[in-house]
Amino acid sequence: MADNLFAENKKIIDLSLDRIEQVLEYFDNPQNSFKTIHIAGTNGKGSTANIINSVLLNVPECKKVGLYTSPHLFSYFERIKINNKNIAEDDFLKLKKEVESVSGELKIELTEFEILTAICFLYFARKQVDVAIIEVGLGGRFDATNVLDKPLCSVIASISLDHTEKLGNTIECVAYEKAGIIKADVPAVAASSNKGYATISNVASDVGAKIYDAREDIEITKENGKNFAIVGGKPYEFGLEGSFQAQNLALALGALEFVPFEISQSALQEGIKNVKWRFRAQFVREKNLLIDGCHNPDGARVLREYLDKNFPEYNVRFIWGSLKHKDYNSVLENLVRAEDEVYLYEFDYPNALKYKDLDENYRTRFKVTENPFDIINKPEKGKLTVICGSLYMLGDLFKECEIEGL
Image (tube, rainbow, N blue to C red; front, side, top):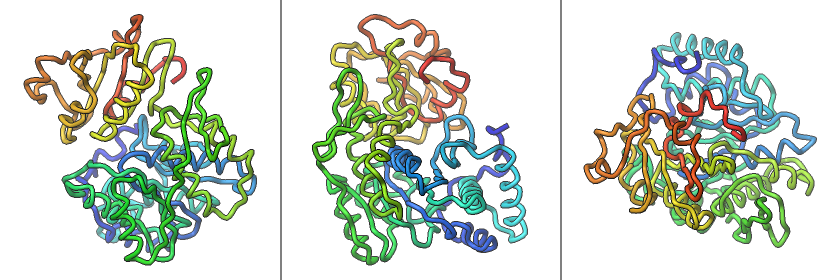
């Protein structure tokens, strides 16, 4: 059911604010009735959003925490959460009908993401959330979420090249589009190590926003199989894998400075410890299996660095899938070594990459697997199986997963 909710009106991406602004105005702009934290970026915005969410769930005064992320793995309902609980199917379908009725009355054809965003804002408003963490879908400047009037802060996560056909083919162009969520007199949080920081800083200055540099004194370590974030010399057990999460944690801590609640040390400690973000460097030890949703060149580079650092003694066996329009050649250049074994999974999704679409040099090296579980369920000593690529691929593959730990 959830997979076909938008079969009739799945419209090509059309970045604009005019359509959703008109529909939301009809509903008296529900997005401005609750406090928000707005997050854009190429990589890391989901992790940053989930860290903030996890901490706020431990703050007693913050009774209802909304979280809006994309894309989904298994159903649209998981994109919209309150206190980590997905929107109920009945609530979703009622709001979808209401939004589509209004857009029809106004003779406005909304995109799929615009409908989802309108549903989200209506749901959070009617449920009276205390704070909502809102993740941008694509870009920022013309993304449907950028109708927020005055968020508590705007957060810009790591910038790299992705969706270049929409956002431009330079870091500066992409950063400019992402920084489009920055508003006048609203604090902006970014890390000076961000490749697009100069552009982000210029945009903040131009619109009249003060930019806050995310702290650089965070280190991610591992001890006795547990991850720790060392923040200002103080260790916190950390629920996410990978040293690259240091910047996302820094952004989250920076954003939390602007929420109107006192955040105790215990709330911070429990939030950082219990944060979860599925299929982001997720390791299943019993299967020698690692799963990661890296789907752009920089994400692939980070994953490769993580593998080299944490699994140097393993031979790597990839099960990989991608959407056809992605820069998959650059992804593979950053990810795959000559000695690696690679299987392409031709998953069931519109525009999924097929074996015949691969460049010839990859076709001679890669194999196709119709059932990745034939590989997953036969772990080999000294060999690490890495499933990575499109989040839609991971959702398709694991929708009926029974692997313990997932």
